[in-house]
Amino acid sequence: MNAITMLERDHVKVKALLTRLDATTARARVTRRNLFNRIKAELTVHETIEEEIFYPALKAHPRAKDVVLEGIEEHNVVDNLLGELTDLSPGAESWGAKATVMRENVEHHIEEEETSMFVKARRIFDHSELEALGQRMAARKITAKAAVRTIAAKRER
Ligand SMILES: [Fe+2]
Ligand SMILES: [Fe+2]
Image (cartoon, rainbow, N blue to C red; front, side):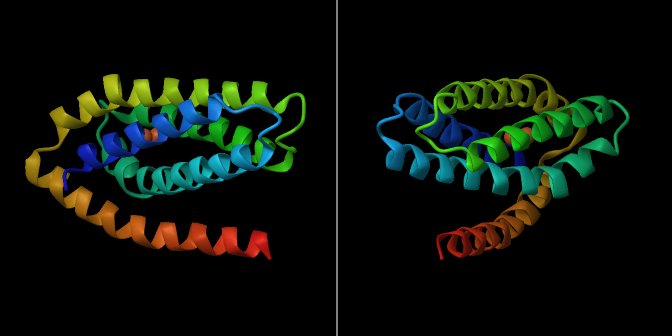
């Protein structure tokens, strides 16, 4: 599959989950926690394939370097918020506000990738390069998903 198509499909999926999370209340702690765990898992896998495969390939091109560096920093901001939300009880007063800020950051980042980074990537890579990147990313996705599941299983024990 084309690398950009794959990333954009992930974006659609995570945005739908974020909309559902936004609708939860402090009373629905279990739903909140379950939805949050799914979002965190999706984002972790997505960031892994971007940071290990897509971003380095793109960063090698001077025209795209700055937008990739910015993307990495935006991932860091989201990761910090995901970490704080993991440690906080979903019933806590600040949980909803923190989740909203996390959602805003993810949505801003997705917008930036789709309107700037991917536009550059389509100019830089030809079709077969995007297919080759997509193949590597699909393979890495499988191992990243397995790693996320192992970590989640350990947490539940
Ligand atoms: Fe992305
Ligand atoms: Fe990203």
